[in-house]
Length: 118
Image (tube, rainbow, N blue to C red):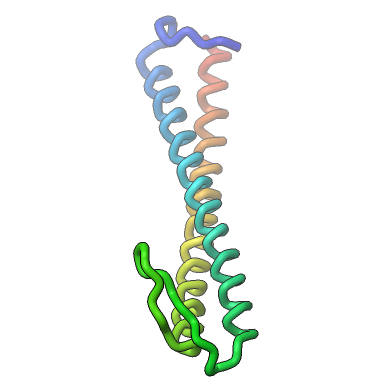
């Protein structure tokens, strides 16, 4: 179904624009969650390797474009903290996505009802 915006009343046009904005927000939030979840998996892999290493093993961490020597236990604590932070962000984003999805669906139903009544 093609919608000609010129044929819609101002209120319906505004609803359609708002629906589009909420859809874009939903897409952006979903992309952010995918990126965070990818970072969580990467952090988990790093933690796994650090846990396998002996405490006296020389380890390095990347800071910007360089590698810097670090202590295994210190790096393990940093990565554990990073993972907790990423998990909290992922959970928060999941909640925002659900709220935004619900808003989107309600707005979509309202707009469909308006279009059917015209």
